[in-house]
Image (cartoon, rainbow, N blue to C red):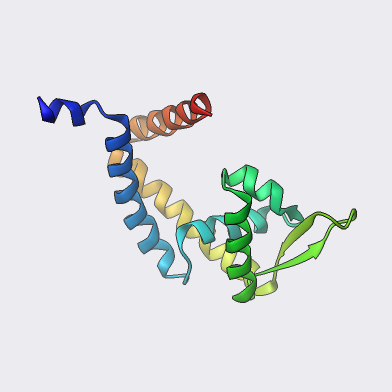
Amino acid sequence: MLIRMFERCLYFNTNTMVRQLNRVWDSAYQVAGLSAPHAYMLRLVCHQPEISQKQVANELNLEKSTVTRFVAVLVEKRLLKRRNGFDGREILLQPTAQGKRLGVQLDEIGRNLYKRMRKQLGADRFDSLVQALRLGANHLT
């Protein structure tokens, strides 16, 4: 009886998968000296220079305070720089030259992770899982 409870438990099974994915992603991005969340933020800013911190929070589905902390780390590592937007209230983010170079490496790591997961899970299962997770998350908000 107890086993069936966990077999059908969305919370338990998604958290189990997240822990496994975190190990894979953290290991992959560790080569670049960043955690996976920091790497994704830098990749986003490299692809959308002049993006606001608010837009980063929306795009990555993170709290503003989390974005502020992550940005501080990336600024300290000299991978990002901040500047005030035109209205003076908005903070815009830009990659530094070093950040841009690392961004290229991070994109390659991301492509390799994508290929690896599609191979391990099977392309159809991978695509279905990602789609189901995105739809599910949208319905829970």
